[in-house]
Image (cartoon, rainbow, N blue to C red; front, top):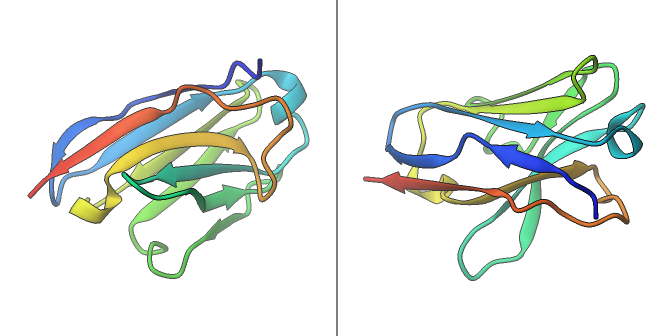
Length: 116
């Protein structure tokens, strides 16, 4: 098992902010691009933001002004700050290597629910 551990989700109101955290094992994290994926109800899991080992971020065009991805290479952790949350941001958020997930599986994810 990959032992990716996501946290920080919850029930928030539209317009508020949230910061998600992910702890990854070294074999997945070290020297690799990492990303955050979202799986909305009834939809496939999709990559929404990624960051290189050196900290260069990439976002979907529709999210780049509200999402901030970051990483701490000393803690094997990545983060996703979501500002001005919208109902369509709701879903389960996962972290993994990006753009191709690692072969060691997924964590449990962290649920984000947005009330309007």
